[in-house]
Image (cartoon, rainbow, N blue to C red; front, side, top):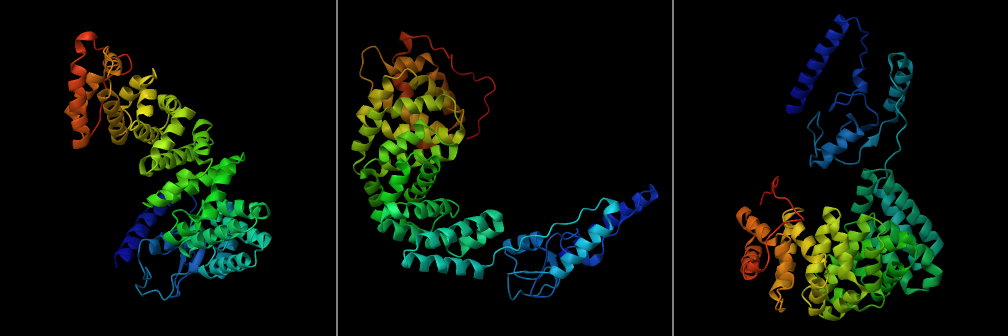
Length: 443
């Protein structure tokens, strides 16, 4: 009822506009009623018919169904099927009408590609499963390429493919081919890996296949390879795997040969922001979740990650900044990490600068790192405490208390202010790296 009344009001407004155009002497073009979508009242570009027999434009009716409606908008009847059927006859008539009215500036609507159906997706996935059992790498690769192509055609196709469990099928295929001869199957494994990045988020079953020993070794091999695309896809899949709370698998990953070096290289020589954020996420999980994280942190510190993170933080986007600060915070749990950070001239200016300038999360990480460095400062000259005062940390932390922050951060700020206050007589508090004048932060 609401849709009908809304449609009548919209039609009345349009009629008024058309009447005014006629009064102005402009030519009127009336779109035939059967060519209009009952939802938008616009000319249909991809007419499809529901089980009730009513024809709509595909984009509009799919939005209606995706919103959780399972009835026909016009008749209010419950739909027997949520798969609309292309109405080729109406589409052909609309195209002919467009050609006929081209003198009015009407362009012929293109013939739309028919979206993939659940039945077609399941058929392809079934063939992939058969190809895996036969160890038919070439046949499987061709099917995976087809799945990727269909998924990239439209968001609707991608949803259909993901909903029908493509992630699990592809993960199982990756695991199956990783157990066989790697040299013979590297091409099909690379294709499957590429397709998996389109299927996120992966479900528990898919992650289970990819966490097998053989699959993990393949992922690390791709992560360590020279090919940029392989490395990017591998780190994206690894990020997906470590995002769940399976500490045992994170521990196993951290112990695998070459993984720490490969992740460090992705941060040092970035491929794209997405891969950098993924690499930082995996590193964060490794150094904060692993029971053997001291060994991994020492390795990362020796590689020069602390200096690299501080240089990255000087100028970077919000997402990378938050993750880089998170990793630095994790590294500063270790004595080697704190020592390296204390000896870096960028530490205090960068950390103080990030407070209240990026996001709440970045502020919390920055305060946490400052707290870890300052409370462990043992040098008589004040060391990092004096450095922090020189770049305006005292004023910045006072401002943070006034604006408000979470309890855990508030406790650290209070302790930091006490530590800094002991050395205020040694240095004049100046603020060469920041300016509070136009600060507007909401907590």
